[in-house]
Each structure stands twice: as C-alpha cells, then as structure tokens.
Image (cartoon, rainbow, N blue to C red):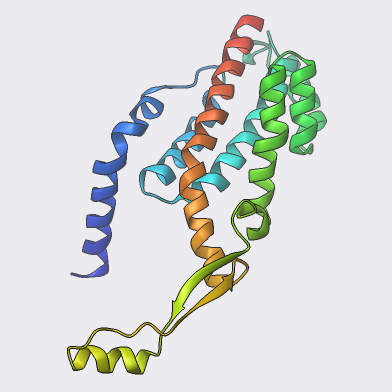
Length: 221
C-alpha cells in the first residue's frame, strides 16, 4: 500500500471513529461571528483526524481571534455597509484598539463590557491561558506538570533478547530503572497523551463561550 492509500485508510478510520462525537459542532453555524466558521472547522478537523496537539494550538488561535472580534463587533454594533464610510471609520478605530492586544487584556475587556461572565473570565484567564502558553512555547514541563518526576521501566540488552527469541527462550528481565520525565522520548509521549486528554474539552469550553458571546452580540444589535 502506497502513502496515498495509507493516508486514505487512516483518515477514513478516524472519521468513522470520531465524527459522531463532533457532529453537533459541525452542524452548528455561527451567525454573529460567522467570519470565524472556517477557523472553527479547521480546529474540528484536527480533532476529527486525531491531531490533538494541532487542535490545542488551533483552538488557542480561535480563542485569540474570537476575543478580538467580539470586542470589535461590540464597538461597531448597529453599523453596517449601508453607510460604508461611517462603518469603515468605526471598524478601523476598533481594529486599532484591539487587534494588537494579548489574551489577558482582551479577556479583561470582554468581562468589563459584559461579553463574558466571571466564571468564563476565570477559565479563559487561567486554564485556557495556561494551555495556550504551554503549547505555544512547547514547554513540556508545563504541559506535563502534573505527572511524576520519574517513570520506571525495564532495561534490556537487545542482543540477549534477540538470542532468547531465536532460541525460543523466555526473555530475561534484567533490571528496572527510573527515567526522568524530562527525557525527550518520555516528555513527547506524555505530551501526546496530555494533548489527547485535553483537546476536545478545551475546544468545547472555548466554543461554549463563543456561542454565549454570539447571543450577547445579538442582543446588543
């Protein structure tokens, strides 16, 4: 089987495994924030195909973009292209105010303007920011911070193992050793596990907040 056919098989299996769990997100369409439907779909596709680290990174981008867009839309409420000169002036002003800001500031402003609740503010300012920062900077010490400092495993002599197999003998266990979680191989394996555990929950929480912001923007208009 060539690479193309292998990939077709892989993606087909992942769709069969994961689509039903994600269907409700695919079926829901953003209206007030329709401009970021494509970003939402990109993140969902990462989850669908099992690209969990990419999903967390994509969700972080979706979060950053949605907070800035929410503030811009809040500041330009009631305006549209029917009066394009007034709209252009207002949207340029709002863009210059918010587009350069970092997440803690946009989250704080969104709370002050009533776009997010106190609980949502805490989640975005703590859990979401921690995930975003850890993955953006590839800090496995933060991603894997709750794991034990060492992992135990057996040390084998591969030549002996090969001889055991050739001679139909039991593989001899030599000795157990402790490996630091900072070891690149251990750190990467654990990051992959952490990503798989956190990716959908992170997206779900961010998307629920996005939907709440949509409702508030609709009420404002």
